[in-house]
Structure formats: C-alpha cells, structure tokens
Image 1 (tube, each protein chain N blue to C red):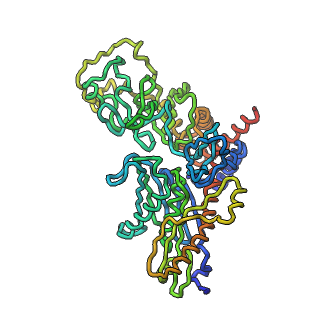
Image 2 (cartoon, helix red, strand yellow; image 1 turned 120 degrees about the horizontal axis):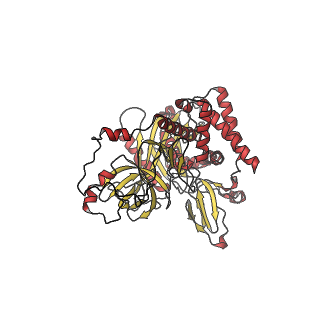
Image 3 (tube, one colour; image 1 turned 30 degrees about the horizontal axis):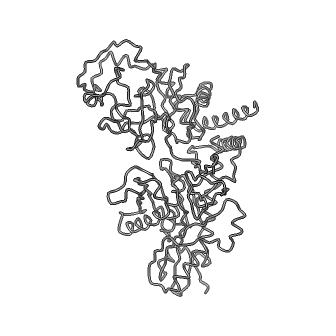
Length: 243
Length: 327
C-alpha cells in the first residue's frame, strides 16, 4: 500500500543519519547522533568508584540522566531513564568493573520524532568512545503503524502523532569477523539474533507487531554498517598523529 | 578525533592541514587489518591455546572484541588496546595528584583515574627525616604536611585491598609549590625512563606525570635529609598549620624572581599548545617549542594564538622528516 509521507520518503526509508564522536572534551566519552532533525547528545563518565545503596555491588552499575530540551524533568523522562538503564545493563559487561558506577548523561537537543532510538544510538556511540567494554553494539529503530495499517520506519514527530501505534525496537549489532572471507560464508544469516528492547505505544494487532519486527531487523543492517564505518577510520588517523 | 578548537583563518587552516597530513604520511602505518570494532571476532589459532586479555570475551569458542581498538599479540596473549583510553596505573608510575581528603593515617588523592588513590602516612618520609614509627601525634599533625587541595608528586605502589596505593619515600616526591599544574589527556604521555626534568637555562622543573598531570615549577634543590645536619629540631608538639601567619622574612625568602615566573608561564603555554595539537609530550618537543617562541620574541600570551599553533605543527613535521632522513 503506497503511502505519501510529508517529506516524500518511502515507507522503508530512514532520514539522513549523522554521528560524531568525542565532541565534549571533559567527558570520558561523548557522541552526538542525528536522524533528520532529531538530535541527541550523550556523554559518558566512568567507571567511578562506588555504587548506590540499592544496587548490587558485585556488578558495575549504570546510571542514566536524561535531560529534556525544555522544561523540568518529568515522569516521561524518568521512564526514558529506566528504559535506557535496562537496555545498557544488558549490553555492558558488568562483571569487569565491580562496585563502580558509569554515568550516561543524555541531552535532547531537538526532538522531531523517534527520540528514544536516537538517544540509544547516541549513548551507544558514546560508550564506545569512552572505551567501556561492551558485549555488542545496540542499534535502535522506530516503526509506526498508520491508520490504514501501513508500517513506516523512522517517523517524524508529525507522523508519530498521527500514527495509530508505534514501537521502539533495539537490536544487537551483527558480529563481523575481522577475516572477510568468513562473513561471506555466513551469508545465510547475516542478521543479528535476538532483540534487546521493545517499547510500544498505542494498540496494534499481533501481525502488525511481527511485521514491525521484521522490517526493523532488516533495517538494522544499514544502521549497523553506518555505525561501524563511523568507528573505524578515526582510529587509524589518531595513532599516526600521536606518533 | 577531538577537533582542534582554534579560530583559524583560511590560510592557517590549509597550512595546518598540510602539516598534519605530512605527519601522517611520515608515521609508520598502523596495520589496518588489526583494528577491530566491538563484537568482531579475532582470528586466533585455536590449537595453540590462547590467553584472552583485556578487551576480549569468549563467545561460543570464538574470541570476540569488546572494545574498539587495535589487536595486540604477545606470545599467547591476545588483547585489544584502545587508541585513546583513560589512564591506567602501573606499578612504578610517577603520578601527580591533588589531595581531596585527609583521612585516618592516610591522604586521599585525585589522580585522574576511576578511583581515588591513597597515600599512607607510613609511605611518606617524615619532615625531620628520622625513620621511626608513626605515633598518634604524627597522625594529628598530618594536616601540617599536606592539606586539602595540595598538589603532590608520588609513585604508584600497587593495588592493595582497599584501592590504589602510592608512596613518596624519596626526596624528589612530595608537595609541589610555586608552579603550575596543567592537565592534558593521559594518552599524550608515554612511559619513559625519566619523568623529572630540570631545565637549567630557565631554572625550572618539569614533572611529566603518567596520569596526564604535568607540573611546571620553580627549580627546587633535592636535598638529602640524611646528610644534612639536623639544624632545626622541632619539639614534638601539636603544630597548628600556619598558613595565615607567614612572616615577612619568610615571604621574602619565598619570592620567585620575575624571570623565573615568566619562564614557568612560557613552558606551561608550550605544554598547552602541544595538548591542543595532540602531540605526544616529551622533553625535546617542549624545549623545541620554548626555543621557537623565544627565537620569534613572542609574548607569552601570544603562544596560545592560532598562528603559533600552526607554526608548531609545521616545525614538528619538519623535525620528524629530518629525523627520518638521518636514519
């Protein structure tokens, strides 16, 4: 079913992505991530000594601080904090630095739809920049179901408001072998297994939800490639400059 | 890469770009095959039996990277080294720290690491140089030795049960005064044979701490307490920290000459320029920058301007290419 989106994208098309790392000098790791007009800045500080009272001291704990672009911190922000905390607790290897706290501060610069996935991608890039060991990278995407049961990816704020329901999905990044031949052999299943987080708003049928999952998983391939390409060239440049 | 925060004009940008490209072409190429991203599996010869080091994890028999960086192999050990990591203390590192707290029988210092380091009272030389057991009186007088916000130079002793411990048992360690502390990112300081430098022609001391704290200060003669006569035998009593009551004679004695202070500022600015450009900080390169600024008769505050930064980058590219040709 063809769908006319206000900005002329096809249902499967993502908005232009932009990512830059190490934007803040005093943070241990930082990154900005922009999807179209939505822009989020994430900073990572840590690991710092000590955990909070109700946290397990045998593992590293992760603390998220969500800062909205306008207004006081409200209930919605606390909910985002909790979602991010659970997501990153499953990605980070928590047994490496026991009894420490890693803080991730997420600052919303501009909100134009798909805010939570953008924040998750930014925070993941910031964690990599800080050198915190991770099990795999997280790639997040937003799928929404419109009134005429059409599934579109990466909605803008207008589209999100008009949609019947939408879902934020976070998938683990694909594992890629350093030796290129292996990846060609594994052509049967280049896609990642499993899902890390799924947050849904509104009412959608089971079929629609499964379709969303499929579409989202297929798109994460593109997002993962973008993320990986972003990580690599900077490292070789760094080493040569430092001599 | 941290973008260089300078207001550069168009020609300056072009010159800086050229100098940096020249440096890149001179350096030995990092083996791009060895760079990995998170969740990449590392090619390993499984029959040999491999030791999985930092930055690796075991996933269904495959060795998988958990950090983005370069794969290093040492005999059977495989680990991933990040290119721009935080400071990681090793035993024997010279570090500079700031006192945060005076606790029971120890001082807590901030050394730009994820934990605070402890300097035990027993790991310090007593002011009168006598080797003895630390009594309760010594504990009460701890504040006279170091207070909060003092800058201390010490050596890493190791990781004990309650954290990272330092020791300052030699005369060259201890409290640092009359100088500047400059913070740079830790990866710009590589471990070398000598971290204490004395620039004779300027009369200043330069201590390059492995944790990215660099101290530039007035030269202090390292006295050996054992040899010197015990002239001032202080009575063992509870001393009050006499910060406010410094007599005029002491103030005059502590006065640093204007020339020395200028040299300290010049050296500190040289370190700041190098840290903005992202070059590794060693004694030779700091001397080179100071000489360059003096030969151009540059004012001290002009050293932080964009023109000087571009000149330093160009000069460094020249120096490295001439070094390479010599070999």
